[in-house]
Amino acid sequence: METGIGSVDGPKGAPSGAVACPATFPASSPTFVGSPEATLGRHLAQRLVQVGVGDVFAVPGDFNLTLLDYLVAEPGLRLVGCCNELNAGYAADGYARAKGVGACAVTFTVGGLSVLNAIAGAYSENLPLICIVGGPNSNDYGTNRVLHHTIGLPDFSQELRCFTPVTCYQAVVNNLDDAHEQIDKAISTALKESKPVYISVSCNLPSVPHPTFSRDPAPYFLAPRMSNQMGLEAAVEATVAFLDKAVKPVMVAGPKLRVAKAGTAFAELADASGYAVATMPSAKGLVAETLPRFIGTYWGAVSTAFCAEIVESADAYLFAGPIFNDYSSVGYSFLLKKEKAVIVQPDRVTVGNGPAFGCIMMKDFLTELGKRLKKNTTAYENYKRIWVPEGQPPESEPGEPLRVNVLFKHVQKMLTGDSAVIAETGDSWFNCQKLKLPDGCGYEFQMQYGSIGWSVGALLGYAQGATDKRVIACIGDGSFQVTAQDVSTMLRCGQNSIIFLINNGGYTIEVEIHDGPYNVIKNWNYTGLVDAIHNGEGNCWTAKVTCEEELTAAIETATGDKKDCLCFIEVVAHKDDTSKELLEWGSRVSTANSRPPNPQ
Image (cartoon, rainbow, N blue to C red; front, top):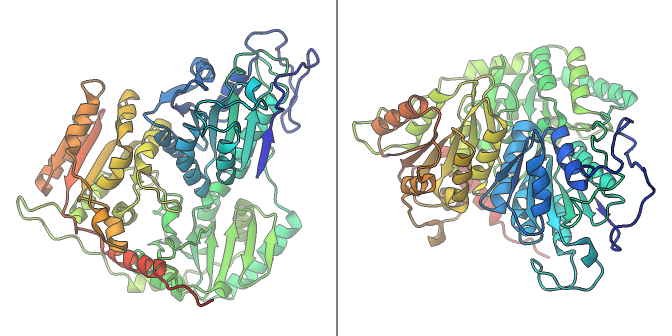
């Protein structure tokens, strides 16, 4: 991690006509000298547009107001005001998933520390996110003054110290001489590392002209990372020798396929190799589930039916971009052996217990491997031999209380290539994993960080970025209570997502790990709350359903007459109505959490 901190002496003079341009950017002939438009605020706004940010999710505060003026004024950039900073960060997270990069803007410390949890989540999920904070006046640095929005100490570094572990670059811009370089380096680092960055801008600097800023900044350019060709050849040769001697090898997609931008290369390798193909749960949606030899989600004991048996009985497996943690491994209960695995990370390949090869881009490696591997369909043929069609939930009696498995039977029917699914932490993880995604259907959830409430802000941001899709969000009542306010922002933005609020009276996922009275929450009139937020402004439709007939009617309305509205459907379910996968997963995670301490 790097930190760029400006001088504490405030703005300094610069030679007239000086231009600061990082070496990785192409030279140009910008016009700037003496222009009132050649300011830090305009430069930052234009850079955001250049890298693909069309929406910045923001909460105003006195330290960032002038900077927000420039974001508002920039053509191609829309400032989306959020109800709180946490949701603004979650929205930037969701937007980055849809568009490849996201941004949020908050004020110093009180805003920065509020957005911090969302930034940590984006860091854990490898998302390029630009977190912009309006900072103290540049003249206050180094003065021993105590400012508001701080913890009462004459030290402005508290916020920076908090952001350092959860961002890959930190820029504190408190003078104009190096502001251009710091901003460009922060943004380029976010894109190169696919991680969040922190940019603090002193509140008195955005509107001050300076010769290092051009009215029309040089075009943004990042040199692509290249594989070491000798290392690539050696890695491919070692992997081919390893996999070609296997009898029933398989391939498993991991979440870092997104970072490596290697989804297409993975699919091409799957086609060329003939291997059975599975995804880790956090990679759902990154690989088409319509691939000819797709066998489902590999999630240890809670995998798709017959998938774990094929993966864990294979004599070789290629994992592309995996993240192995206690959640993805179901409490460390995977039946995998390192000596059977080829682990392909975005820039590194490890074959069995060794050798390992660095400086190799995943996309290049998978492409070259597809040209060399012998075709082997044995594992998929074994899968087809043991596969049995899955059952359907029993038909409901008229007026029978709605079961969650019936809800998801109907959600499945709603999915098309023009839709996307957002799954909140909780039982929605497991129920949504069983959905079969049509080609083009998006899918997002936050598995590594698992922060409840993430989905409300993420839905806002994802829908804002993926305007070609109608997004379906499955959110538990406990999670919704954490971040409900920004349904308001969805209405202000004219979004038409469908929210299924699953009201089962508490934190069901926590119940299955370790139950207690703290897992029960106060019941809300959720449809009444959303109606109050709507307040006659914007397009909104709500319904509460308790049985299958009501659910069917609500879905028909949401996809018909109200297809242009934000649709909020509260689904009332029994508190113990959970997926069998959650029951199994919860008990295994509970066992992992409660392991006694090792003797010292």
